[in-house]
Image 1 (cartoon, helix red, strand yellow):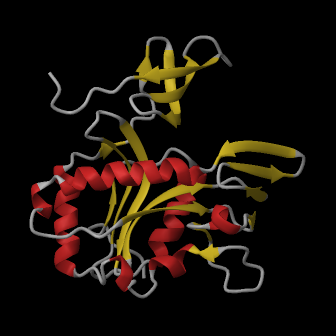
Image 2: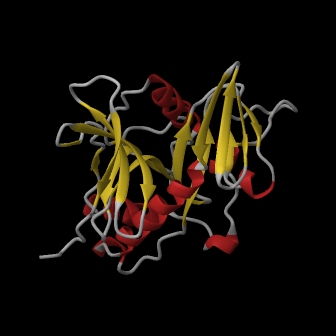
Length: 248
């Protein structure tokens, strides 16, 4: 097990220890064989000019997955719109991360399909999933809110959600286009290169503000969390209006 460097492509090293730990957990447990491939910590510019950061994309015999990593410890509960993370007396309310992950997957899939490498190859469906990577996390999501949410594989009754490795190494789902073979994997790898993926730029600045997490994706804009570079603790919502690729 463990994907070798010619199958696991680290586009940029993560600056977060919890994210590095989650990526190491995945890499060490994936088989080093065709058609497995992975790309971690990259960003891409979609056809409409919007910019997205991706934690991980994995190609397996069972399909093609964009993985959003979340590593808050404790308990997570909520619905299809909002998640509540609880750890001791602390509580954090966030949007359901699958919403943004689905947007990223759609944009990346559309970009890849336009690449020459996939002119004669049918790319598998790119599915978005969330990996709650904190060891021992208790996932109390139910119904639609729990769809495509995974944790570390436990193999015991203590598990509160599906194991991510079990999902990545599952048998092919014929309803999603069948098994991915070596030739498909090579075509997708070339398409990723042609699409111009690049290291994530986590220090992008607009004026006096350093941009952080993408907060919201509108029909023609993106809202980022902005932190003032000189005034500690000053944060603003910064809105960017992307320019479509090829626009004059």
